[in-house]
Length: 128
Image: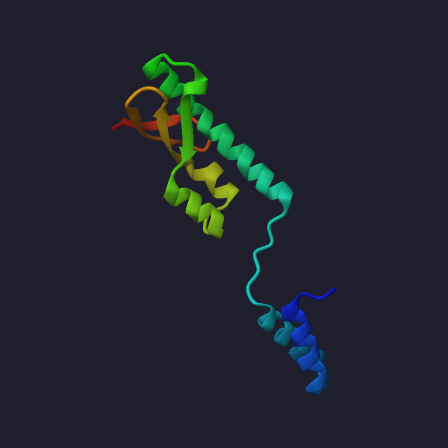
């Protein structure tokens, strides 16, 4: 079944006679609007990469506070997360440039951020 937008395009194409195929294709693509196609496998690979990069940051927090891993929360920095969600940044760029994470320790008034390179090695560690 066609999506609503594509049904409208199909109806317009029946009403408006076009003799060449290329204008029809272009019209259909423009009418369908922008679409970001992300496969579940690509999303899974990206999630795995983020997890691998975050391990270096988590280990650094463990060294600093001598707490169990379960007490530590490490999240991708908000700006970086937004760039990944919008497609501005890719997994390839994460591997090349690394990532920035926010971290906190449960039960302690401790938090900060941690930057890692593309292999997960901590390049900067700050505590608030």
